[in-house]
Length: 90
Image 1 (cartoon, rainbow, N blue to C red):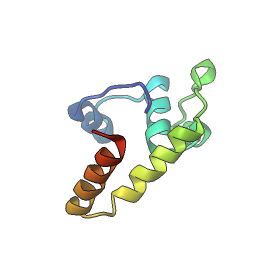
Image 2: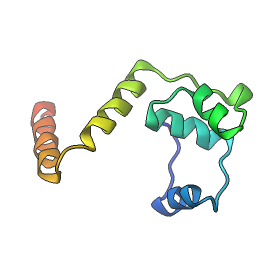
Image 3: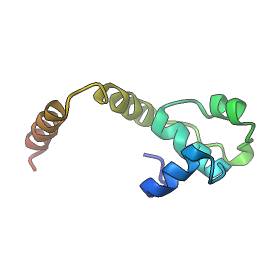
């Protein structure tokens, strides 16, 4: 979604404050969380300046779906994934 690929260890390091955020990472988190970059800039005091990337409707819709899916049980997620694959012809 964001074009930024991070390992789980790197995400954990950011969460623990061991790795600093930068404008590129902030843009990536904005995309995945579906939060406007302005909000994250104000919360973190990290200006993105020219690196600011507007979020498309597809990205915000996907982020919203991810937030909704987190409330489902694992079996429900598997069922939805299988249904999506069947609908996609996979």
